[in-house]
Amino acid sequence: MYGKQTETAIAALSRLAEVWDGGRTRLSSAEIADQRGLPRAMVAKILSTLSQAGLVQGNPGPGGGYALSRAPSEISLRSPYELFEREDRSANCPFGGGVCGIGEPCALHNRLVQMQASVKKLLDDTTLEIFRKAVQEDGLVPVAKGVRPEAPRESYRAPAGRRKQS
Image (cartoon, rainbow, N blue to C red; front, side, top):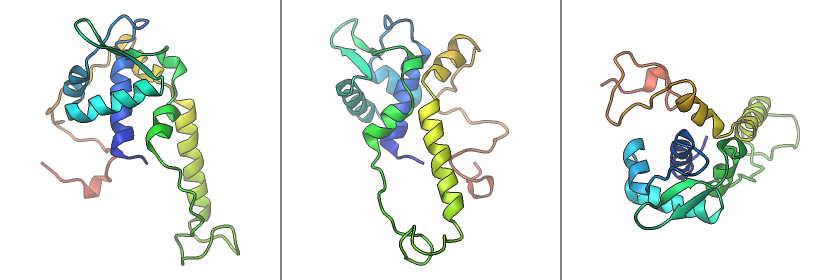
């Protein structure tokens, strides 16, 4: 659905949303990286890009760090997605190498269009507020780095049959 940079951006933004208190609480890139189990250098680079795009505000030095530039309810997942993902403008059909939109639709056409519409709706309709609410109002505690579930549930990452068992 999206690449590693977008995933890291959403992880960093979601952590900042979890601590949102009007922008007073600031986290360093190292804190965000460590709390999300991500590489520090990558998080620092991503936060720099998010800052340039106006999604976060960064202050250097002691007492500095990053905070969302506006309320979590005002930032949709579309914002980081558009920063790091390229829109695939290819008109190639995955079924037989033809051009999509010419002739009869392939066997996958309607499903792919439906999937694209679902992803667009998710990106447009989901704001960072979902993360703030989950932690501040619903009491959800993010899982610490390295913790493995006793009974794994299905992941959006890989189908249950293809996941490696540890």
